Every structure is written in structure tokens, then in C-alpha cells.
Image 1 (cartoon, rainbow, N blue to C red):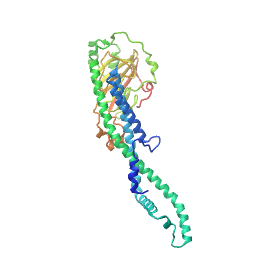
Image 2: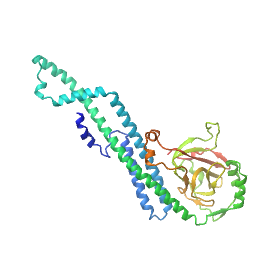
Image 3: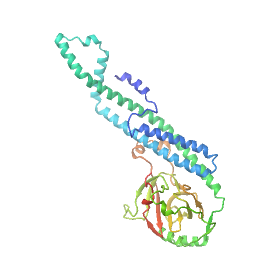
Image 4: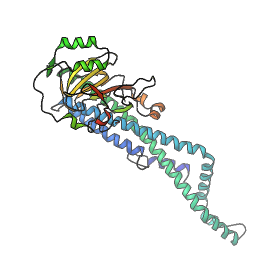
Length: 379
């Protein structure tokens, strides 16, 4: 094989081709592509869905998962491409000599290769040496061909992934806008339950900490329709989905750099990530609170409260009854565009988890570790 065969290798660099095994970046990107296609289809179907809010919420989650998988595929592809190029650079001289040998073997007439100046004995000896060298050269040539082919596939993959990333970012933004509009239309409806507004304002005025506010809030009664029959929340331990896509930045009662501990989890999330209810819950409070940003305090049962703090936008009001998976709000920040996400720094660092959501679970007014309640604390 010679460098003049490289265009033929590049011609093999089509999107579905996979060249590495289990954690192949091409396969990762293919799976992400399928996820984004399903999300785009869900966006189209949401227009006709009976429950448009539910459909749009599922669409946004699908877009978030697909975009994260696509960026992971791009990250792996960039790392793999860099590693191949480093090897090529380090072995440039040796590869040049190899290509020279392959080129001379390819261009020399076969009869000429069998003639040796020292006669028949020299010809026999050179033939024996050639028979030993040829398999090694062939193996080197095969390895070089495979690496060139993989490099071409990786470059083609990244070009296609960038285009799909742009489409996905546009799609998820359109879905978020549509969900906000749908939730605004819903908010013209009265809440399912009400509570003493003056008592709630008094609590807010007196609140000095999140803990004191949560404890006092339990004393404010809800007034309204009958609560629907639901499975016991205690039976859900170990099976709840995370309310937002992200990873645990700091665990329960884990000290931060300043030595401060909090009786909850701090989750790192992407900007504008959707926050959903992990269980059917009543909204006891929704709004800004102290220095926590927008806070939603949800009640799955009388003895339990789930606190979600740090959102940029809320979709719920006090008194709303949420089904499992219902949207609670969006994280703050500004969603990055395609150019920001494909920089070498962004690809090397993985996900852009620049926002934080504080999650606290309380049982009988006391904080408990939320970790065992969730099927997975990293998504």
C-alpha cells in the first residue's frame, strides 16, 4: 500500500462503518443519532398529542440524552484521532521507510526480483530472506492500512456529528419554548389545592434557613379536593428516577472546599436541563427562597418532602398536583451553541455541567440521605 491509495481508503469512510469494538466512537455516535431522530419524531408528534406537556417533556429528555451521547461519541472520536496522529508523528521516519519498501516491491517486475548478482546461490539466499521479511512487511502494511481507514472514519464521523449536533440543539430549544408556552396556558387553570397565602408569606418573611422554612411549611394545611389514591412513597425507595440529568457533585453531608456540609445532594447539570418530578407529588411551595434561587418543595406523602433548589425557571405553583415525570422547571444558564460544544477544550472535558441543583429529602422533618432512594444518582 502507498500514499496514493489513501483516496481509496477515504472512500470507505461512510457513517455506519464501525472499526473499534465495544466503546467504538462511531457506534456511540450511531446510537446517539438514533436517539436524536426519535426525539425529532417525538417533537412532531407532540403537536397532536392528547397531553402535549407530557409529550414535550419526554421529547426534551430524549434530546438531552441524545445530545449527551453524541458529544460523548465526538469526544471519543477526537481522542482516538489524536492518539493515531501522535503515533504517526512519532513513527514518521519508520513509516516512510515502510512505504518506500512497499512502493519498490510494488513497482519492481517479478522476474527482476528473482535475479541476484552473485548467481543462483545468492538468488536462493535472497529468496529465503525475502520469505522471512515479506510477512512482517505485510503485517505492518495491514496495520497501517487499518489505522488510515480508522482515521478516515473518525474524521467523517465528526463532520456528520457536528451537523447532527446543530440540528439537535435547535430541536431541543424549540421543544423547551413549546413546553414553556404549554405550561403558561395550563397556568390559567386554578391549582388543585390551596393553602393559607398569608401564613405562607409570614413563613417566607421569618425564614432564616431552608431547614427552618421546610419545618414550618409542614404546619400549613392544604385545602382542596381529595388526594388521589397512590402507592406508598416508602415503597419507591431504590427505584426513583433522578429529577434531572447530571451527576452528583457533592454527596449527603459531604464537606465542600470551605468545609460546609449540606444534608442533601448537589447535582451538576447542563444549562437549561429539564427538572421533573420523580414521583406523583403535591407542590407545597414554588418560588424564590433565600439565596437558593427558585425552589420547589414537593410532598409525595404527609411525612416526606422533596426539596429541589437552584432552578432558573419554574413551571409549577403551590397547590399543583404533579404526576410522576411531570415538568417542575428548567435549570438556569445559557445553553451552549454548536461552536462552543465542539472546541477541543469542550470535547476533552466531556459534558458542560455548569449548573447545580440542590436536592434534599426529608422524612418527618429530618433530612435523610436521598442516594438510596434513586435507581441511579448519575445519568
